[in-house]
Amino acid sequence: MTKYIFVTGGVTSSLGKGIVAASLAKLLQARGLRTTIQKFDPYINVDPGTLNPYEHGECYVTEDGAETDLDLGHYERFLNTYTSQANNVTTGRIYQYVINKEREGAYLGKTVQVIPHITDEIKRRMTLLGQNNQFDIVITELGGTVGDIESLPYVEAVRQLKWELGNENCIVVHLTLIPYLKAAKELKTKPTQHSVKLMSENGLNPDILVCRTEEPLYKELKAKIALFCNVRQDAVIEALDADTIYSVPLEMMREKLDVISLELLKLPLGKEPELFKWKEFLNKLRYPKSKVTIGLIGKYVELQDAYKSILEAFIHAGALNECKVIVKNIHSEYLTPENAQEKMHNLDAVLVAPGFGSRGIEGKIDAIKYARENNIPFFGICLGMQMACVEFARNVLGLKKAHSVEMDAETDQGVICMMEEQKNITHMGGTMRLGSYECELKTDSKAAAIYGTTNINERHRHRYEFNNDYLEAFEIAGMIPVGKNPQSGLVEIVEIPSHPFFVGVQFHPEYKSTVENPHPIFVAFVKAAKEAQEARNKVNRHLVYEHSVAEGL
Image 1 (spheres, rainbow, N blue to C red):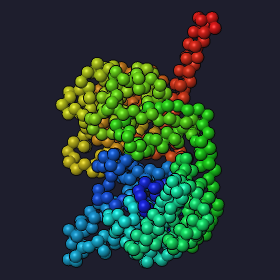
Image 2 (image 1 turned 60 degrees about the vertical axis):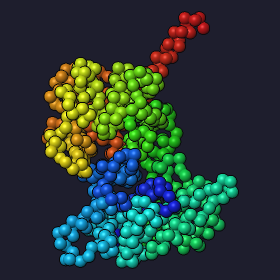
Image 3 (image 1 turned 180 degrees about the horizontal axis):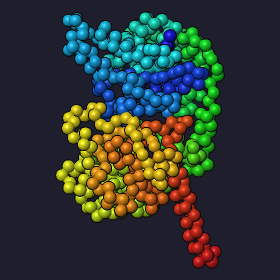
Image 4 (image 1 turned 135 degrees about the horizontal axis):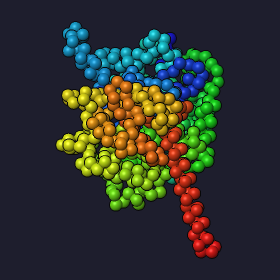
């Protein structure tokens, strides 16, 4: 029988439920157990696809085209396995399903209520991945914190599941905060006690407490927490602030979170977790041999979660290159031709980020122009690739009014146009070109050399595409479409072969980068940044030498 672990949060949001859930899953996976994770979000949006990044951070896209919570990115990066539509459920999706059934007459005239109809649907979704003996353990992260009004149906559904399945088949891991008061030089347990009390008032008691803390939890404090929160003392887990999220699995292993979970679920411990590759990655991450500075040009740079997968892909690629990647955020809205030199002269490479809408677009175009003209390694993702085409059309092809019809619907030089199948769509949610699509690469291209193959699959999230009416003009001028979708002819990758590294992609390679398999384009991009830095340093050393000779030094 499939076993279920629920990860809940208390006291405050952003404690790291997703990282703890992913870390526990990693340890169980390393013990040989078939493990998956799912996220239940309490907001009424059907999915985060229409949410502003400032509201909810990055929208992550799965292989099957689901727009999901960014925590699914953590799940894939830690487990190195794909998630799907089934791994992310929202209150909006739950209510939409129940209301549609009511309209169909499925409830035979009954009054539809939160209990049992909504909670029954929540339970059905919670156990869906555990059907057909597909997994040994399903870990479910509940969004929000215990006590939130919108979280109450989920807490009630878990309470019912524990009663139905039994304590040996269903456990709750509760993540709380143990704040440290510097003035009193004390760790305070009361917030955790109140959080557990609030949970117990709703009929649910935690089996394990994971306590986020800035200072170590001493033995007597753990005993106090266990006594007042009604858990085993060894089930009070210390979660100290870590230097990187990728060290959390090892910290949880040290605290025996996986062992205690398996004991409570009456499962054999199996083999000891083998995390050699993980430790090797951490070693390279912590002790790099070089460092580069890469400019991230975007319009949501105030919120790092807006570009979460990109930042994590840099960490993966940096470790493989034994290089620390310092990301310098540059807000595209405030970038102009006049200040581009000042803001970008010390960069080793430039990445222009994806996004939607016209705000900050001209700044992105200015950044691309500076990178192209100064031979700085450039990487454009989705909108970044599209703006690279607009910049090239304006400044190389001489099409001064060139633009994307997304930003200028009236332009007669729309080098980026709306996809044909998108033109009659009126509903915004879940209607873009989403998920994994094929791409065929030219054999003599930089992309083919990077991937080591000419046939790839990558994930997409867009409505607009390169206008193939301009294809010949771009090729003649030196920007080559080296990757196309074999079914639609959609341009997926463009390159400038005469440039040291100038690559734009219509897809989102950051979604597929993991600890064990860093994405090849990010790896090549970081390597290009290192080479550009070395070349610049060599020139600078030569100039210093010539100056010294001229001065007779």
